[in-house]
Image 1 (cartoon, rainbow, N blue to C red):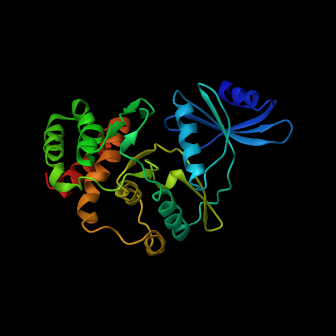
Image 2: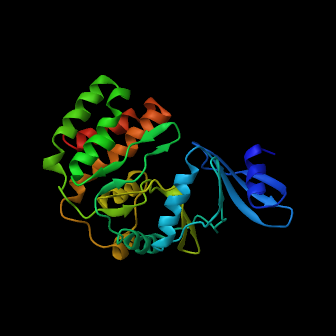
Image 3: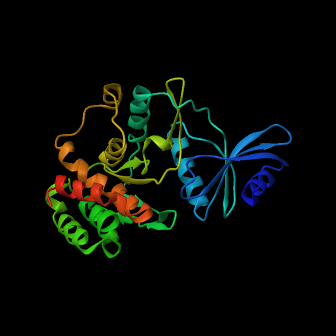
Length: 266
């Protein structure tokens, strides 16, 4: 059994009986553990787990469904196991996300940097939303993508003052909202997991959700109607996760980045 699973059991004050790897551990080690006393938990290893624990605490305080943090140290996070059957829960997700986005901040950003595995996520604080998106979500990739993409990306970033609202309400974002990070059971959301939280425009989470999935009409019925011009801004916001995928998983995502740049008008 892995050292990570053993360490998770120790943090719970128990002895490990069984450990099984879980799907979704592309950027970190993830295990379901069973202790000798019958308790179950999910154990995650990685260098940013204290930050993740703090973000999960923010989500729980909203409140929205999310696993309880059972224990954490500098490299191990132990989480409550939540029910998950993978069934659709679009209506409930709309209500959950509306509740999350009802939490407002004073500015855009977060009080700490974060990371997706080896890829850093710059945060900091700004009162200018287009500037935040340009510097922390687009231009941060310029040294790491092919020159032709970098030129188009830099051109888009330079004009964001005309493309994005200057001061939309800074709402609490999940930050990595795709189907794999939404646990469902019995037609309800049972947990939002793997957050990469910060305060920003609500459309960021909506764009991410629509990048690899197609939300049903029931989602919008509960979340609310899109803001005017949202469709035109969607590819700008989808570029962030597309660029992350390009850097983490390779050239197979270049076509997606190029399509989104074209949709964004560059």
